[in-house]
Length: 203
Image (cartoon, rainbow, N blue to C red):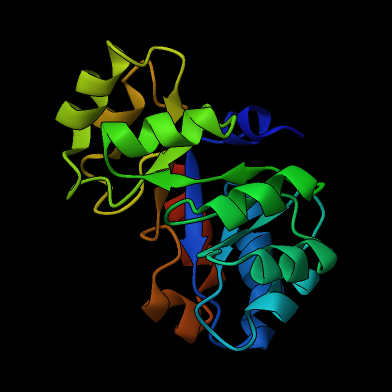
């Protein structure tokens, strides 16, 4: 799948921190059951790569890797079964690694200049990050005029109260958010609660 197809697969991409490997599969099942199949597993814990490998086996899950900052991380996640990658920013070495990779990269940008640099590297689907701090809805509206070919997945500061306002923008295909897999529900093993949060994000 190309990155735009992945972005169109669900309105919200859960941004997930897996602290314990035992949580990985039931968490993926809960989110898929709630209608959110696209999962971004961040490289913020020692078990993240193994979690990607385990969650990739869950039927219906489209598992990707987040917080990618180096070519080595991209290759490691790809080998673990990740089907897409997300980065907080973009460097020349990461852009080169993405060109050589079999999986698409959704690079992060926070300014018009960064968006234009990403375009020079061939990227037209971008992550606005951190979305609220970078200007939020106003920023996305401002970018739509001079850069109409770009589409975005704003991430950072999105909530159950404001994410639909972002999705209403024509240059937003999906949003990233952590509220559908909150740490307290994951630690409690409340998979039904997570499924309910996922369902609420799809209506």
